[in-house]
Image (cartoon, rainbow, N blue to C red):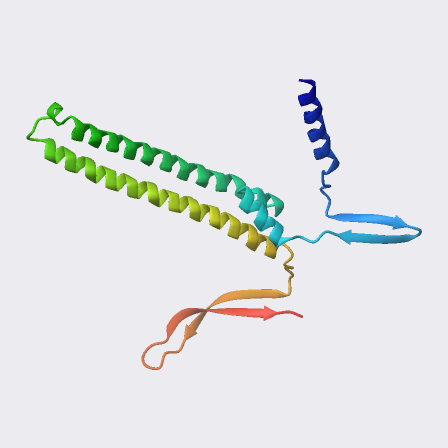
Length: 189
């Protein structure tokens, strides 16, 4: 018991020793000189974090609002997988029951019952497999979102770009002119 307590204390102490600060800029004063270090945001790190634990890359990118949406999607898909798999297993068990004990069922409806169970088995296996594919796509989109957001984190947005939409009359070669819209983009530099 004492050994476990010492191991636990050593692990907790090591986490505290390697904790990172939350600030992005670190200022160091050395003999009337100010050195400012800026931590570079890494898209690769955000991608790896999201690959290890879905949502961790979004937290690294400080897009916390995406995490509940991600986990709601993952939870919904996982629920569908569990539900369709349970119905699939139930139908497989019913089919084995009919095949092993056909005398329990009336002979007139045995073939129709077997066919209905086989259709259910095919349908719910397909639904389960599609939900597994959707889960993989959700996981992949999570990683892709963390990567793209990580790359766009350092993207500067300024007021140098403006655009305006206005109604316009567009001349057509034959007949009456057509109504439409024009988009004017201005680059101010």
